[in-house]
Image (tube, helix red, strand yellow):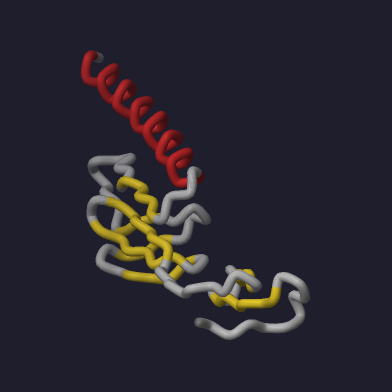
Amino acid sequence: MFTDAIFLLFQASLHVFLCLLGLVALCNSACLFVPLEIKDLNNPPKGCLDRDGKQYDFGSQVVINCMSCSCTNEGFSCCDIPNTVEIPVECEMIVNRQACSVKLVLKSDNTKECGIV
């Protein structure tokens, strides 16, 4: 009975931690980490789950929504793929998350592309 109470307390603490971790990710961070969740000690996970419920094997590396992600026995971590470009003052960057690409266009006419300096 005592171990059940400790397990429930641990599980509640883990949920609070995950919620706070989600808030940190929303506050303009470049990386996020979701710790591996072990629900049943007799049936340990064989990989990591992304937020859509898709499973990835331990050791796998994938690109999801322009983020480089990896699955380890500690959890699932994702970081923005760096793309360092100096943008001219008269231009702005348009990001296409589905194609994982960017385009520089003129602020005054976003149908015309800019060159990279």
